[in-house]
Length: 530
Image (cartoon, rainbow, N blue to C red; front, side, top):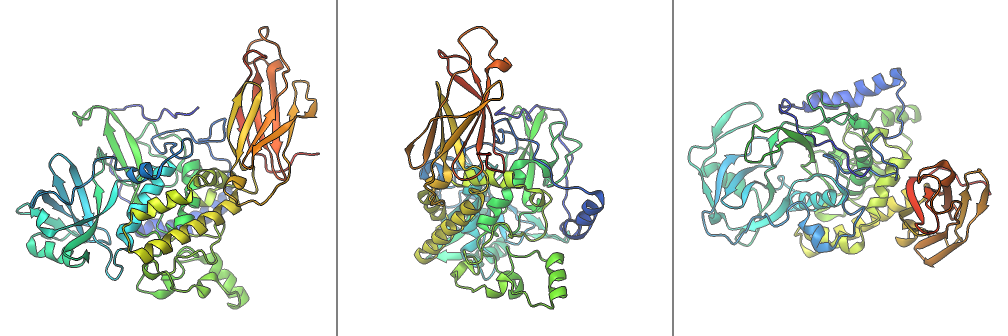
């Protein structure tokens, strides 16, 4: 199954959900772990996995780079396509129709006729360029992986391109309203980075449909009939921990997600529709800096309140040296973001994420097989979208490539790294991602073994057309015609491996004329008996 039919229209849009940050943090740090402990709730296998050990397309995830090659230009277009702002438009054509009422970064919304609505945000105070570029880069990487991310792009523009809609009001987080006038606009623009007379901001295209609030990383929505898989058991949400670790997206919490209800008829907002799930607000990737240096250097290494580490330090009298104690602020605008001491197994967000803590080796390996598709050229193209200065661009490219390779070495070498499985007649071939990405120096020969319908086992001939591919010559066990295609007499299982865990493929032999049909893939955790 390559398509999860979870976009079936239903009449009433779900109620808006408001996520309380303080409660969510307390719940994930203290109450939920205690409840799981007493409930004896170990993580099992992810639920939304098809017979090929993959995640089907759905309203949560769409296979992109994991199933088809992607050019640098395609990656940069990403979630934006051709619908982007033109900074060379005539003066006064970007109409400010709404102030930005919440979030850490000041901004406003513009409505450009013929183009659409965009929220424009500046960098946090004291962090010029980093966050605006980070959200543009990370949005493209998340989109390429398969998530629904917003169209976020860095834009340099002259202030005269803006015009204020009269009478605008903005309400802050405390519920207090005040005018968003020329003075308020000037204050926002004064806090932005500049390149000569041009202002630097990130433009985030307004999401389609009706916004109904964040999604949670556990449970399901009772008012969404399509939402039937517990979120903590979705492989794409579990595996997102590896992607977050690569980018140090420590702020990967429910408040930085968004559900939208899309009507089936775009011209009729009251028509039946379905919910699509977005990941957004990615500006905290790549080394966010906080007022407390002790927090800034810990991001990605420890939770804000890390009870397990606190307990260890109490027992050992603080004798254990932690990686954040060795951190050095050498990343320029990226602060402590580097490959030093990066361990994807030990990576932590700001506080526990219910889906992340249930990630299994299989979930991590699935995401890593996707990240293995990001060549150096694709990483370079993504970073270029951040429009940083030359030194910062070179630094971020180097660190992202180094951290990617750490992830690949960790998660491509325990389960089978064989992917892109294909069958041509009586030949079964696959690509070894560990060797293709050079994170494995192994030159050990490949082996293949078939399990026949009678459960007899014997070796098959194996060839390696090149350093990254392996092919197995299949032997027929059934004739043309006769038994049905799915009869047990036609069923065979083939293990293929080098010096680690095997790729186990399930096939039906349709006879010499039609060849074999692949029907399933497994990745067992141990090497086959010799």
